[in-house]
Image 1 (spheres, one colour):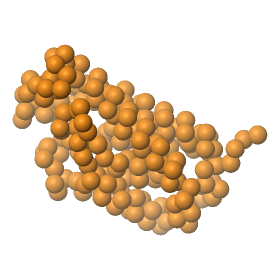
Image 2 (cartoon, helix red, strand yellow):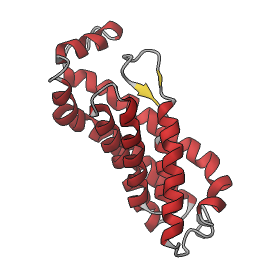
Image 3 (cartoon, one colour):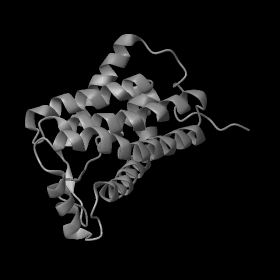
Length: 202
């Protein structure tokens, strides 16, 4: 017997005004969470952990995958006011966030159960982690190289892990970091979704 959807009203058609309002609310929460980023022990200082994909994942589940991506975009646009990377870090955050929440939302649209949400979120986390390698290797780090030599970035990794002597090896660490971040977002989503879903679907 199929289990009930995460939110019993999730299959109802929601008016556009509600979707826009909910997207704005979740984007504001994501922006605030992005401002609360922090460094993680045993990783280079420029790798920051934040929970700003959590509201985007909530948007993707409750409103649809496009709205989840919209939350990712809005929070990064607002973060440009305090960027220290010339927008490169925000571009990376947006691309990876979209790789996370879009497939998660798509799968949940097909399987509107708690199991479907869990599968979608974990698949999204895996996709985000795996795509972090080509996105960083071919897009983000070549852009950084115009301002900071790649060798200097590798040196920051080697302070912690001396064996990381190539960019490709360094990005393996990024995959683990990104997947861990995704799993934390998935866990928090399942802890709070039931409590806030009436607000998101009202």
